[in-house]
Each structure stands twice: as structure tokens, then as C-alpha cells.
Image (cartoon, rainbow, N blue to C red; front, side):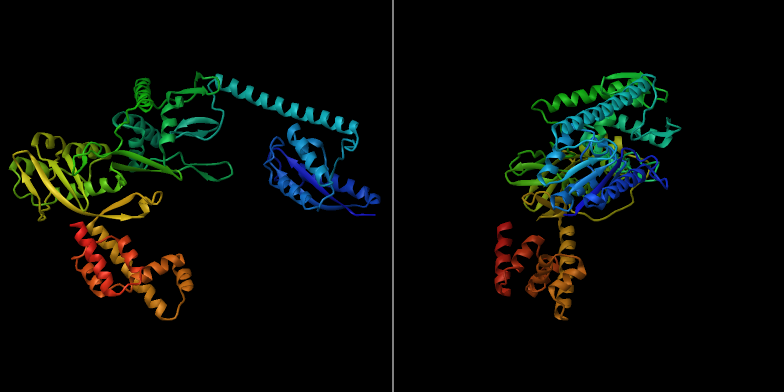
Length: 549
């Protein structure tokens, strides 16, 4: 007689009691194994127990169940034994699909406490009736829980869930966390000053405000991640901060037992602002989210607009005016801040006395985010982008600057080349830049470019050359490229790229290091990979240099 492998499947909906030495799962398994032993005359043999603890029978997303079905498909199991039918499933549809799978691979099903034979029509009817009652019981239980939650909310009670920023949960009640409550107030008040949720996201990041950090009853740490635009949008709509408990399914709100963090007046102002911005999104008007929108132009006078690129849970923003050229806002904004700091730390030669004094009384580095943003918008008249430079036009009107002056005098007196246009109350300052494609800030779209200052570009090239010479030294010692890649935790392709740099023309290397040659790293990689002679390498670079003039 052919041996029949019997699998035992046991399940418990909740985790309560699983820590006991003998729990419900043990009881189910013991009863099922005893039944299999009693059927030894039919050549039944115990094969394996599949256990899903703390998982509902209303879902198929159960690890042990999936493994058991996979073993059935491989012919390892001929009979599945359960304590009760609802241990396998509480859904008629899921059970029906499983029975089809069992029949397909010649596997039978037995419930040891409910006698039926699935090979007969009466047995199948009995099975479906039992399943109907199991599903009914599950749905009634769910309705009971929902009714209890609805009644608790109507009484203003906290019904559980993920804690909200600004509150701690003590004895199942919401209690204000004073530090987080100030952060919530800051978010609501700052939204009225910011132009958009995107701007608010940048603001909260500079302030170090994150999602609520909390610890579960099992001691697992949760939260603490950065607040993104969508999360801020939800937070600004949370009525819990008004001292209310909301039933989001019915839209009803009830007076809560917890204290409010936000006043009704501030709440209404924020809701009105949110509605205004929502209307803007539904129209053809796009809000000015970027710091330098309306300030940045190309040489033909075309203003750069805004563009965003969202991938992999991250949004990259760009200034766009010329077809095929996208300037990352993060890098343009950084270069602008660097230029402002260089002007404020300079000797300010040629600037009229009132403007010079006002500039020296501005503490740009210590301004808070919103004040610094406002200052940049007023200090920058315009910026003109060219292929290798940014030309800044800074406003030196003493009346405008006086709104940002403090008591501390900036004693830095660095020499700096700029044009002082006192007639028009402005400074004209040029900053050399270089385009680098494929930077980390541009990882989501290789067709868009990264922009950096000449100094930053030179540092990037020096670091690349250092890697190149290091890998060359290892290679000449006898290490293979595979060994170097493993040692440096880089791809083999990356090792080859850097090794090629080590065989560039010495004249090119000298020009790079003494600053007489400005070129981006991408172009260097391309030239180095062509296996050209030194003269050919220099010829290509000379042609590119002439094109850039």
C-alpha cells in the first residue's frame, strides 16, 4: 500500500497566549498527530507541521500556508489535517481556491473535529456550510470591533493606533509632549510663512523635526523618519490638534479628552491657505516653490522655470529654461549662498559707506531658515547663467539691507573681485562653475546635469586622481582588478574607470593640478577610456577648451 504523507496545519488569529509553554497551537498539533497515528492502518504517516501564529484566517498572506501549498505542488503531501475547518481559512472564496489546488495535485483534506468526506457532493455541501458560518463569525466579530471603536470615538476617547507627533500615550490616553507640541505649533505657523508644502518640507528638515519617535509594547523602536510633503499635508489636516477626535469614515468629530495644541484661529488660517494652494494645483498656475524662481535667467533673457522629478520616494527639483539643460536647484541655491557669504566676508572696496556698513552688520550664517530665504529673495536682483559662470547682481540699497542688520560687525576683510555699481545700488559678481553629469545628486536622471564651483570640481578631480594612483599601485603589485574591486567595495567597471585616469598625459595632469585647465570629471573619464596617445589626449582637450571660449 502506498504511503500517504500527512501535513498538519495549525493557526491562531492573535499572538495572545503564544508565549505559554502549552498553547492553542500545541493543542491543535497534538490532536492532529494523534488522529494521524490512529489512521496508521490506512498507511498514513506524519510528514510535517505548518504553523501560523498571530495571523487572521481571512488572508492568504501566511508564510506557513504558502510553504505548505508549495510542498503540495511538489507532491510531498497527500493529505492535510487540521483541527477545525476555520483553521485553514475563514474565507469561502480562499477555501474554494485552495480546494481546487488540492484536487489538482491529488491532495485530500481532513478536519478531525468535523467529520465529512470531500469526495461526495454531501460532504462538499457540509464543508461550504461550515465555511459560511466561519466567515459569518469573522464578519460579526469585525462589526463588533468597529461598533466599539465608533462608540469610543463618540465619547472622545483615544482608540489606539500610531501615536501622533505632539502627544504621548499614557494609560491609553493622549498626553501632551511639550517639546513635540512646540514642533507642531512651529509647523502650523511656518506653513503660513512658506509658499508651499515643498518649502515647508525643507524648513522642517533644517529644524530637525521628524515623524513621531515611539516604542511599541514589544520594545521595538518606530518612527523618527524625515517628514515629507505628503506627511506634512496629513499633519496639517489632523483635527486631533484642535482637541477633537475624528471618525474619518463618517466625517464626524467629537470633543476629545485630550488637550488641544493648536488654536482654532491658527487652524482656520492654515486650512484657508491649504485650500488656496489646492486651487493653484488645479489650475494652470504653478506656485513658485524654488528659492531663485524669477531671479535666474540665461544670456538671452529667458527666465528659468521650475521642474520636479520624483523617483524612488525622492523628489529632485530643477531650474529649466534651455532645452536639454536642467540645473539642480540644490546646487544652484548652494552656489548662490556661497557667493553671498563671499561678498559679506570681502573688503567691499568701492561700495558706498552706508551700504558697506549695512552689509557688514548682516549675520547671514546664523539667520533662521525663513529669514535667510527672505533675505536671499531681496538681496539677489538677478542671476545670469552662462556655460561656465554665474553672474550675480546683488542689491545694496541700505533701506532694504537695514531689515536684516544686527549688532555684530563682520570683521572679515577678504580681497574679492567684483564691480560696485553704486548708481544702481548693486554689486556685480561672477562665479566660475562647471557642469558635471552623473553626480550623486543627479542619480535619478542621467540626462540632467550637476553644477558645481570650480573649486569643488577641482577637489573632485584631485580625489579621482588619488583613487587612480592608488589602484594603479595595487595593480602593479600583482592584485587583479577583481581583488581590488572586492577590497575597495566597488564594481570592477569603476576600478577600470579610475585605472584609466592613472595613464593620462603628464602634461594634462600638471595643468589640472596647477589650475590652468578646467574640465569636468566626466570628460576626463571619457578621454582616459579611449586608449589614446598623450598627444591625442592633449589635442582633444585643446579642441574642447577652444569650444568653451
